[in-house]
Length: 471
Image (cartoon, rainbow, N blue to C red; front, side):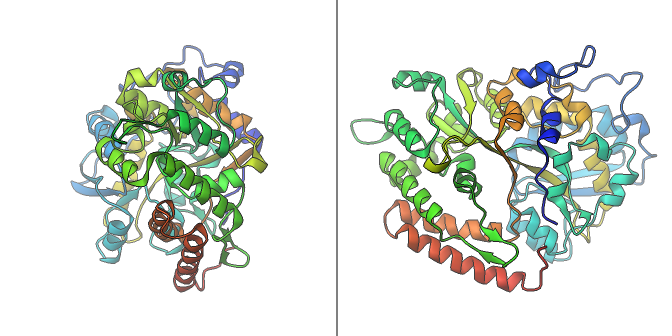
């Protein structure tokens, strides 16, 4: 099934759950003495919403080992280590030896599944829909409905449809679920460049003008500061141009992918202009030395970055001083969509392979990851948001500069889109990533890049999903 575009009312209700998030949260009914998410396990109150107390756990089973592979997840290390010490984990997961591997990727996970000895749980996949339609995941609807710890009506409405296929649920949003896009910029660096931090760019052209002033080099031509790398952070995804120009790659009715299109040609030409400011080799050297995604931004070496709702919390943990300078706002748009405010929602899920050895044990791990104790820890160390309504009502989003904007963007966006459902996304992106590098180096044209990406992706789609019903 195609993930539904949810009503504006559902998103306003979602954003109103947050405490201290801005105008919407200020208008929302507030729970009496609602505690902040502190990252420390709270003492169990006399009464607590069903689904969150350790006392409800079933008797401990025999000793088992539960294996969990994540396609990325160095951010997981600290909160998971702390979670294992909590009373909630010890009660819910009694008898479980937890074997967690955060150094995996989609390919390694698929190889493990194909080997006949899959892990018991997988998460943070770059292509959830591809795993669902291949029939390698276990349906989780019955487990969720019979759970005494996690309840459907305590999950935000947007969280389950993206992991629902042919009426079956295949993922539990036990990692994080929130907004995926925003332009983040360093107020101090913007002011130093003579720009107005109160008037951020609304189009790609305006952003290019900002980047010209924010890009700095030494006398030898080496990069000292990056104004904007369009392929860094969430800019590295193909959803970024989809939102800016307003289209989708996959036509589910015709089963055709339209990648070679005028909007993408314009996008690649603009990306090339950004790369001209710094130089492709300079940028490669810069990221090799200073990291990408949050790292170089946190160091004050990247001035603007397109990133998701996790950005404010991760930044505050990486560098509290840079965090104080962070401002979050709408991503720049194409000229024809200049005044459109767009937001995209998606998340990361716990999935259980069809032939997992310990599916019930992995479900208990997923339940532990949905407790207040776990949500508090992931929010404290990573700024990640658990999509449980009862937990969201206690979160003070204002503690992370920029996060209130992400919360308010849910209700203020003109367009609210789910991540595009595309089972060939990982393959498509891998081919595009290779070819777009040749474009910014001016070895091939944007049209050649897009034509080849479309040809290869369509061939692979037809090969893998020839009999797949998409509607």
